[in-house]
Length: 292
Ligand SMILES: [Zn+2]
Image 1 (cartoon, rainbow, N blue to C red):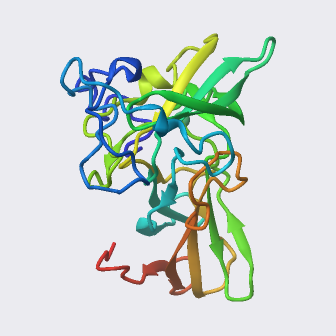
Image 2 (image 1 turned 30 degrees about the vertical axis):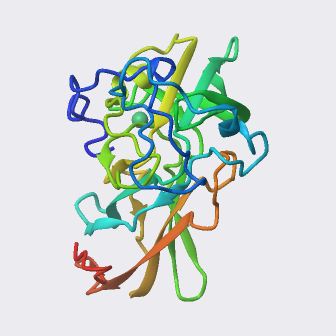
Image 3 (image 1 turned 45 degrees about the horizontal axis):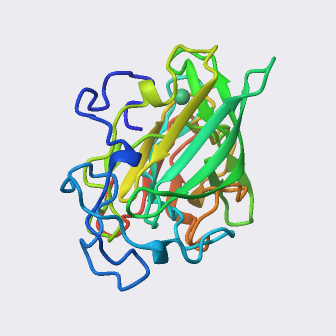
């Protein structure tokens, strides 16, 4: 999320978590069965009381990988790209976001593995009316004890890499994340949540190393943005030759999370390293009008 490491910046207090079980959207065609924009508003928590959930037909097609109700994790191109020379190393700093364009919120439930700083993760799938329609194992969550974190991260949510013209790859060490709805990306898609819960402190059990269970989520239409400006998160390009590179953001890189589509999990942005040793800088080519 933006300002990750700065707890409190994420629109806290607005939340009013919409309880999925209590959310009942009006009966409407689920995504994939007509795609009428705005027909379904899961998790909005604002549907009329007493509205009937859609019939059993909404459960058709669930159960397998790539089922009907799954998130679709998509990365946005990196932005706010610059070369930080202040530490004596050359660190390529940037912001990156992964958002959910699918038909189910991404919902990862962690349960503590006794005697460890790990939780076993289960991904749960929901239909547009908020009904649980399936689940699958999804790896682990891990306790991150570093200052600015002190919460639970889902392991291997995204990867950042800088790819050189000869295929050289330099990767960020950052791969695990506290998942949360930090940015509205596109709430015009059919299954989008209009008022999802915000804030990573409760979802990721801030300060609660002894937490026994948590649920992290990324709602449809919403993104999770991180600014990679710390050692270990920024990409260290010290010693890399000047030239043209591609800065990659890869969502769900090891495929542990089920999605409707994994063919859109990588995006690249061209970055040039230029200048004299000790005074180099990075130039990012504009991407669809984005020039930072
Ligand atoms: Zn964190």
